[in-house]
Picture 1 (cartoon, rainbow over the protein chains, first blue to last red):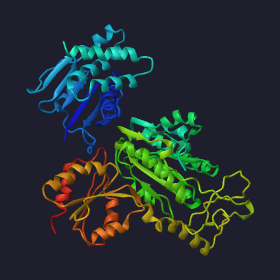
Picture 2: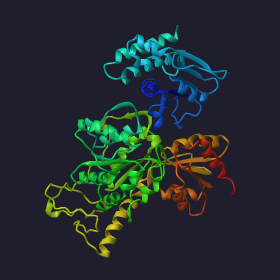
Picture 3: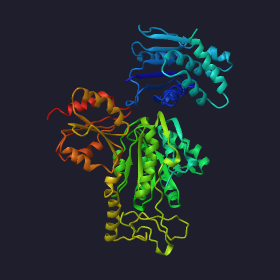
Picture 4: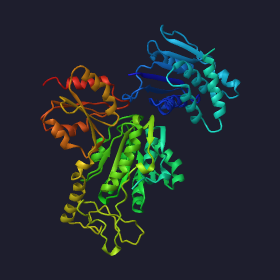
Length: 178
Length: 387
């Protein structure tokens, strides 16, 4: 059973939950797979390290929580310190280049980073950094199709911001192909 | 009768269980919700507050849960379908009015998104500790119905079912969610309105002079009228006769309470809803409900791979309890295993119905998270020991 466990981490306001939502929506609505998203509730969702977990699978998902994440998208140093030790052997780690200094990474982890905040600022809106991350994630993670992820971005972002977010998505995707 | 298309968001959605419950209520025709928002049920009423103005519904954020649980009953007697939404601490406050709904045969839905208790406990984390409260929480003898969804899809489907059961039998129905299911986001397919069947209110269509509000026909469920439509109705929590007037006699009490009891127990085979997987020929049967029906699956699969004959009996409707099925199984299997996110509630029913023939092993959990499958697996393995 192909089951991918993904953890997105960052701080409140970075669009961590929305990122998890976009991956899950892409997989379950547009790629016809199964997806379960669980978001962190409680004090951690209100200011400090914030996280969302998504499971994507070919078959119905029984156990709803992630146990050994194989992919992580981390957008803050605190999220890196707190969550990266949980990453499974041979897992994929994606970090925001300027916000996360990667130290003491275990061998065997595939690590990629992207200056998503700078790219977002070049587009004129720092807030879309999570969508830049999603474009990059989509291109390297291979969990959802590009069309599905792009569509999920388009329908999940606030009305009126679709064009900006889609260009952020494309920038992230293209960055992966450099 | 089918759902009103105006309220049905037909299509594929990626939403959480709380939001799916809201959509199920709207599809079921619920147009009145009173509640005192409480984690982890808040998102249900948040969405209700946003959606209701567009479908002609009324949401009132009440002063507390006591008021919420009786406001909905006023709305029902005024002709609406109504529900309230809460979690443990609020559920406790509602208990007096659960009994009022049972006694006055007011069809309504109580949603409890269970969190770990006792008291305020763990507001943001799951448990299944209110199952016996849903069965016995109000004083006196009454029967209620409780359904347990295990996914956002079922939060939609079973909210509709809860409304249908409440209208069919004129009882309060409990939708017993938990924080995990409520805050879990998955695909929810909402069918076209014409594919959603609803049980309409059992209206009395005769003339006022022939109406007795609590006279029941052969199915033991009386017909309702709407307050303000010219019928003289009296609705009281006191023991009452068919006219609805208080009658403090032993025969009146016996007749009324026996009927309230019988209208559920004598229909329990119809109300029963459970899903079986490889129960025929099983040696051990794992009995689950709600989210535990999912967390048990990896454990069941592992035990089967190791050659154990493990069946899975998943209760969709927990109350009334499927006594008959448990008794049948107890006479031919060798053990029940009951994982639940409490210290042993539904396992007591399994034990009672097994009547000493086979052991029922609890895999308990104090709540705060869901079971790890390993614990349920160990429960399955241990159920074979000492036999």
